[in-house]
Amino acid sequence: MSEHLSFSQHNGLGLLQLDRPRALNALSMEMVSGLRDKIVAWEADESISEYLMVGSLDKGLCAGGDVKALYTEAVAAPKGEAVAITRDFFYYEYQLNALLSELRKTFSVLMNGVCMGGGMGLAINANNRIVSETTKIAMPETAIGFIPDVGATYFLSRLPSEVGTYMALTGARLSPADALAVGLATHFVPQENLPALIDMTKEQGSRAALDRFAEPKEAAGPSQLTEQMAMIERCFSADRVSEIVERLHHEGGEAAAMAEVMQTRSPSSMVLSLALQRNAEGRSFKECLQLEFNVAQWLFNPKRLERSDFFEGIRSVLVDKDHNPRWHPSKVDDVTPDQVAQALSFPADRIAFLV
Ligand code: QUE
Image: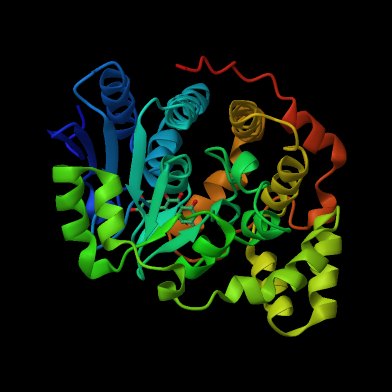
């Protein structure tokens, strides 16, 4: 079992704690499989009636998958094995995401602090998604040459207007008020009350604890995203990334600033993410996870690995921290429709979902 997890039971509550604060609770393979095994056991355990997941009250729920470790292991391994390392991690993470989407018991999660990427995959299917004033929500994968995954193809594409497309392409950070406004979060509890919320959930369950500590959504303050919604709709409804960028420049102001952010993101990641978002209609959560897995495996194809935007992105953002990635290709219009089609239909392993 992972040293970065702890589990305990309190009057029918199963408490799942991520405990790796120095890495912002970034998920290792051991953490993913430890969570999976405990949840499978608790689903069958009649003495457990609900779950609460918490990260660090200082730092936050979770920064994502431990992609830095994945990078270090993969660059040290022979090519074939590098692919296997990334394949296994994402396979087990997506299995866990699917398991969390079909729980038999009420599931609450504290989304304080950093709640990004893989952290969103843990939280998104909870019944009670509790934010505080410290919450920072994002799907930032296009910054590291990857794609919003962990079911983002499903849950971002179902957000109001084009908010999901905006989040997927830019990696924009949402405030607690934004998250409540678009439905990514369900409850607001001030940071100072989180310890008491946890204590009361242990004693009396989540219903009583939220009745006591959840505040009206207005307490989270105004949502900037709500004010930008009409502009986001106008710009991010385009069918091509280059068209979105043109529309943003044409709008000027804060829209143009979004276009500037997109200049720094991986062109391949943005084009693939847009295709995944547009492809999500009518698909189930698991079908979306499988499509993401296909694309992830295509990105890790050994033939293209040395030119992989994923490795270059992790190198530039998390390892060397020069924030100066050299993307291949460097322009969105150089990512061909044929490549996109290949990526989405890449014959990756079928994920054997547990539920
Ligand atoms: C985009 C991402 C991630 C990121 C930064 C990005 C991501 C991730 C981490 C991260 C943060 C702190 C750690 C760590 C990883 O940063 O997925 O190991 O200690 O996990 O711009 O997708």
